[in-house]
Image (cartoon, rainbow, N blue to C red; front, side, top):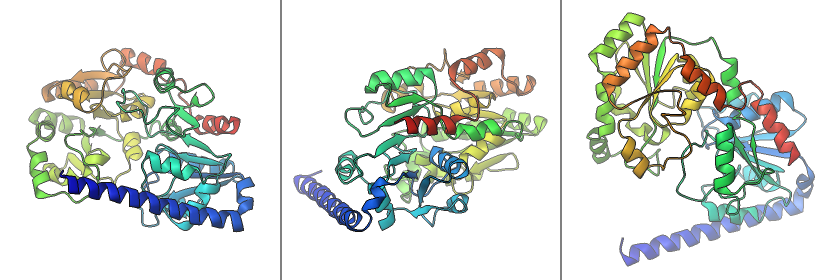
Length: 411
C-alpha cells in the first residue's frame, strides 16, 4: 500500500468515527429531551449477528419473554433476516441499526449479546464502541453471553477486562472459567460459570436424533475472508479448490468405504461449512448424492443439525462442546494440526488428546475406520469419553438461561 492509499484509508477512518460520533450525539440529545425517563427503566437489549436469531442471544431472549414478560426485553434483528420469523411472535423486536436501536442502546440497563461488547448498533471497532459508551446509561452493564466455549489462546487482548467494557463474561466449564479469569484479568464479580444459554435447548432434545453424521469443520485464516458475505471471485474459487482443506474433504466425502458404511447402516452425511467460508459451499455441491447433503446457512440451522445428528466429525471448532453436551460420539479430523495452531489460533488450556471427547485422526482413512467402530458400538459413547464429558461441564441441565438471568440481577 503506497503513501497516498494509507492517507486515504486513514482519512476514511477519521470521517467514519466523526460521523458515528455525530449520530450518537443526535440520538443522545433526543433521549435527554424526550425520553429521559427511559434511563430509569429496566430495559434489557439483546442482539446477535444482524441477520441471525439462533445463538445464545436468541435463547436468552426467548427465556426472558416466556419467563419474565414484566421486564422490558428487546431483541435486535433485521426484518429481512431468515430468522426473523423465529422471534417475531415474542414481540419487542427492534430493527437493526434503526433510530430505535440506537435509542435503546443508549438507554438500556443491560446490553447483552452473544457477540462481544453488547447490543451496539452499526459496524464499529473497539475504539468506536468505547466512544459510543460515553453516551450510554451510566448504570448500563454489558453482558457477553459468548457464541461458544473459549478453549484456544487468543493472540489479541480484545477481551482483557481493563481494555474492554464487558461487565459480565459467561463461561461453561471450570477450565474455561479459570482460563478467562486469569488470562484476561477478570474478578469474580465480572465472570461466572453459568453455562451457554443455547445448551438448554440441547438438553431438552435428547432422543430426537436421526441417522445423520454431521461434518462441520471450522475456518482457516488463510482461506477465510474479513467479509464472509462478499461475493466470491473466480480467483478465490480456484485458490480454495487447490487448497489442502478442500481436497481432504473431497477425498473423505467420496471415499468408497465410507459410502459402503453409509449404505450398510442407512446413514446420511450433512456437510456444513463454517460461517466464514460458507461462500465456498457451492464447490462441494457436485459431491451431493442420496447419502451426502451439502448444507448452507440459509436453509439449515446449526443447532437443529446438532440435535438431529447421531455422530459428529469436526476439527477444531468449539461446536464439539455442544455435541458433547448431548453425550453423543464425535471424531476430530485434524489433518493440518501444526499449521492451524501456528497460523490460526495458539493452543490454549484444552488438549484434544488428553481432554477431548473423541479420537483425533490425521487422515481420512483413520476417520472412516473410527466411524466403523462407532457404528459397531451402537453409536454410543465409550466410558473413556463419557467420563471426560461428565468431568468437563459444571452443569448438564436445562438451567443455563436461569443461572445467567440470576447472575445478571446480582450485578
